[in-house]
Length: 543
Ligand code: F6P
Image (cartoon, rainbow, N blue to C red; front, side, top):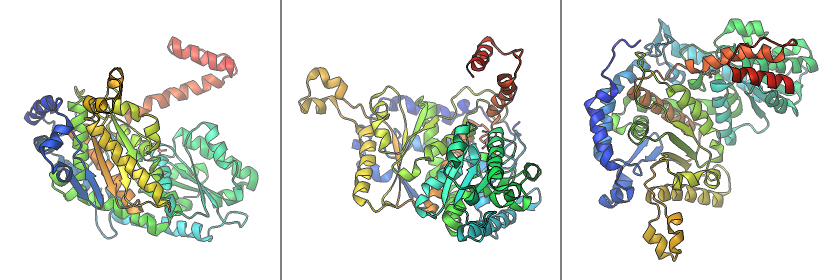
């Protein structure tokens, strides 16, 4: 597939050098690294676009960092960045450019794809979105009975849900509190049922968000929502209560939504990279066009940082390289995302799709099976809830779990005394993970000797702490782009395509075969494996 098959990753001399580095470092404690260099906590930090990242609590030396940058150079990360920003068809298995960065390019800048200036197209859609959002927010867009819209229900799944749902929660403090927002994704009827049960159809606007407009879950939910609306307000009401966000105008029309009420995007926007396309319509209605443009400016600022900063000063590249370091050289299998902000409660879920649908791959761009691990499993919960749940395992379990702590110096709520407690916890967790508590310290506290081993904290657990002044739309944009480009960096090292997702197809196809077998009146002839056959029979019996 790749035009220029490169040297196999693990044969690169710099890879071998990193292996040689990693071996002795396994026995070095962060306590020693900090003791050797009292300036480490200030030196191993990087500030980019208002995000301060302390990466000193990582099990790296200056030499490790130098080698990681060399690795990025050896796999030609800079060329790959240029190729993405130039609009090359780097999503080779789907023959597509990858240009989410164009979605946040400033008006007037130019980027050609297949001879078209995509930035002009982007801003034309943004202008239509802004106009619509203002009309909904200002009460100029009314429902079919003349009532104002008070509830917005986004129906979508994956990238057409997680970004909007996460951004709404993250930016709730900036949202129009007179409006209610709901996000329906699961084909489980409970999701839609619960989302609309207390809503007045006459005041409800549905945004059907689907890049393809063929996704079974979204289409099923959209059809049911449409039936609910028609039942209450009649067929003619659909035009005032349904808008679509999609790349597929034909399917939108076939569904019964006027393409006048459709906001488009393009095949060069991957689903999990689409929250700054028209998929962000609900976000724009929530925070207003000006707030949305701030979000875009934050994304763009981090895009520019990634595009232009030298590798050793490049925050997304650094984050990506550290992830490679632990995944490939310390056998770390997961990466915890720990935002100390309730507003970021959906951020870990959002990052799960971004990271794992992107880099959960096991063949290289050229189609060869890799013999090294690729994406770690991303997971997490907001602090401090996680502390009373799974942190025990991070502190004293047998696995190495690199953590990203994310916090803000200023709260958005008025309860500043809570905020000090919140931030103290974040800083304390990073400190405890890194430095632990020795057997001697435990004994000095008078702990009975037999309890000593239970009370020791080994420490040496790595983490990054990402700190910003406060959570704003622009800062959220910067955080999102930071992780997008970290994923890009990881994919470049592992030589995988971060922009396709063939792995989700098989289950979709098989479910289409099983669905009629579950509902058939006559006993169906089942030709699956014996386990699946038996489960289908049991569901039929119990159903
Ligand atoms: O999970 C597979 C996937 O294709 C995602 O990549 C995408 O975000 C999601 O389904 C939804 O797709 P669509 O926006 O086309 O409905």
